[in-house]
Image (cartoon, rainbow, N blue to C red):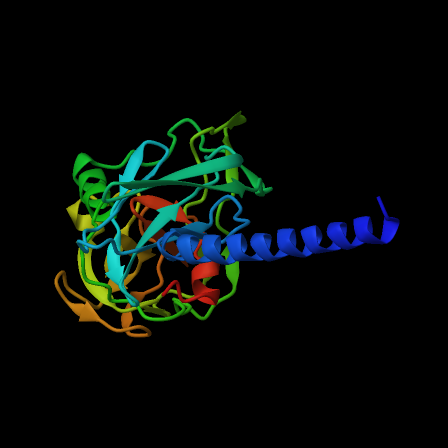
Length: 296
């Protein structure tokens, strides 16, 4: 065969192959677009222990809320902008770092998402309680606080990044681990951030919400001391403890930055300070990202 004729045939066959390939790519792009549009998304893509995960899912044709499952627990997804649903998933220092899987069930469609949960080093403290061991707390106190942390109400009250609840310096960060009388507490971590301040210094609501818990030493709040719990909605809540005074009542609606009480040293406290704990679906998460990002 003439070498020029053979080269021409090869050239035209190559052009035909390229043309068909491009056509198939275009067809596959068209076919895949609806599926891609319905994909759930999880962020941040590289979380660390204590971070709050956001899962956003486009609404299905029936508009039904998807089911979000992580670590065998189902989380409620709430409607958000753009015809989508959003769920907030907590991680804590007690979780195991590594591959974290999230299952999203929307209608007849099931998607499996995964992120790599990074490890994180937390400071440790040694606490000596003495023979008495400090106050043990009361059933009334624990029942009220547990019920508050379990709240998942449909209305979203917070907007944008959360505000600082006190003006003093941070004296203890989130996630600190502890030894009690020389024994490491496996199930303990500091569930919040502590702020220094004199007795009576103002405590501010970090975000809008409904006051869902008011507890006082006189009512048996031996460990938390005078306490205010604010429901920010959709499973997000703040608890302020060790207060010297309380300026709100249960059922009150508060705005971000509103004074809700004063710093104190009530309950199991070694000195005047504010403890602010932020909870997402019942688990204590690091408040710092919430003060940097709006989680909208």
